Structure formats: structure tokens, C-alpha cells
Amino acid sequence: NIGYVTTVDWGHHVDCLNRIYIPMSFQGRLVGYQCRYIGDRVWTDECPKYRTMRRMARSKYLYNFDVARRSRIVVVVEGPSSVWTVGARSVALWSKSLSHDQMQLLRTYWGDDCLIVVMVDGSAVAESQKIFIQLKSNCDTPIVRAEIPFTDDPGTLGESRSWQAIHDSCKKQGINVFDYFQGENTSVQSVIT
Image 1 (spheres, rainbow, N blue to C red):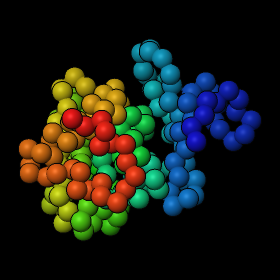
Image 2 (image 1 turned 45 degrees about the vertical axis):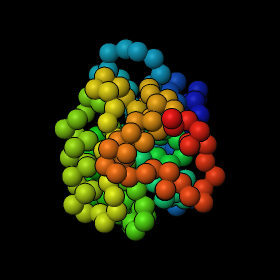
Image 3 (image 1 turned 90 degrees about the vertical axis):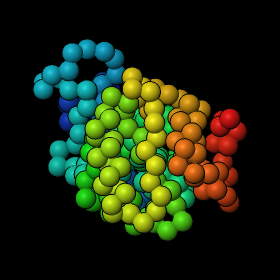
């Protein structure tokens, strides 16, 4: 559960004060957290947008992994706020790059008869292409790079526009995204035209 840090007396560093607390759980166990500043300002080393728990190995985990692994389709996004928008079938890398450990998780849990969709910030074209190539060369399952407008971030698209972009990108490659929802209780089909 996310929350808002108003005091630091329960184990958080003072750097997390007045930020959204985003816990990172893996296989049912809390392994760390990240705190996000809310509002607009100039980001500096002294006041970055995100503060990550010291010694949290972000590159070993995928945010929302425990929930997303229940589905045959997974959407790979950059950060937690994009997961909140795209929905339960998405995981976040905590960055614009894919680590070896994260690739292994995707490969292991979304192997045969599954679909992996890469959906990274529209301004990070080179990074999303690199992630796509990494997955394509290491996974035996279909990999699709969702095309979103250059200026858009998956976190700002909303669930309906995100899934429409995923559907359209899959369709261009001859993949019917609905095939991967069979047997799942989903409202996604109702938002795709």
C-alpha cells in the first residue's frame, strides 16, 4: 500500500518526509521502498524527485511483480506511477533500462504462451528500443513495443488510452491482445475499441 510520509519516527529517513511512500514487495516480502516528491520544482541532487531506500537493489526487482504475474500479459513500464495508470498487468523497472535480473524475471514468469509489452515514456525512444531488443533476443514469447505519442508518458495516458495503444501496437504485428485475456476476469476489453 502506498502512503504519505508525515513523520520519520517509524524507520524512514528524513529524506522521505512529505513524499509519497511506495513500498517494493517481492514474493510477498517487503524488500525496500521509494519515496516520490509531489509537486513541481527544480530537481537537484539535494532534492531529487525520488528517494530510494539505501541499499535497495532496485535492479533486482519489478514493481508490482506479485500482482502482475497472475496474468498471461505483462506491460513493462518505467516507474510505479505508470503501473498505477496502466493497471494490474504492468510492472515497473524503476528506471529506463532493463537489468539482467529483471529480464530473468520476465523470461521466467512470462515464458511460454504469454505476451510481454514494452511501454516506456514517449521521449525515451532509444531506451525503449534497447529494452525491446534485449527481451526479443532473450525471451521465447512474443514481445511488442507499444507505440505512444512522443510527448506522452504512460503515467499520463490513463488506462483506456494505454490499453488502446497496446491493442493497436499488437494488431500491427498480427497479435490479438484479447487472446491473452482468456480465462481472466478483466475490464480491459471494455476500454479498447
